[in-house]
Length: 187
Image (tube, rainbow, N blue to C red; front, side):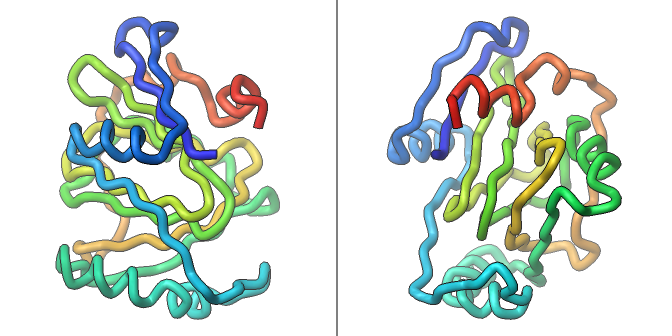
């Protein structure tokens, strides 16, 4: 289930929650975040290659490439057996920005994006079928969980791919982790 939680920056216990797609999409649009649901008629097996995944979503990927002049698209997969899962999680949990906007489409699994906008923090639990775009220079972080299990299509305008500028803030420590939110939501 996709969920948006809007928190007060200084009082995370004060929040407003939305689980309806139209409400999530509308609230995120207000801060310049694109949120979509994609489907495919192709059945992808757990063993599907990255090329198979990109092929299954080729029409949607091509539409976004043409719309935003993306230069590259790839697939990132992480699961609980990944040897660098702890280091990657720690890196993504640090608040950062990118000079380009960040687009992720969840092919499988889930992850939790946080966007720090003004005096609010928007927590977006994304699941299979969700596409989220984080605006360029927006403060944000991502929690893939202690035992990640996701595959995402990533689109880039920068041929160097994922390049982050870290804010040095420890704000992410004040908000629920992926596991804490899932427990709270009973998922």
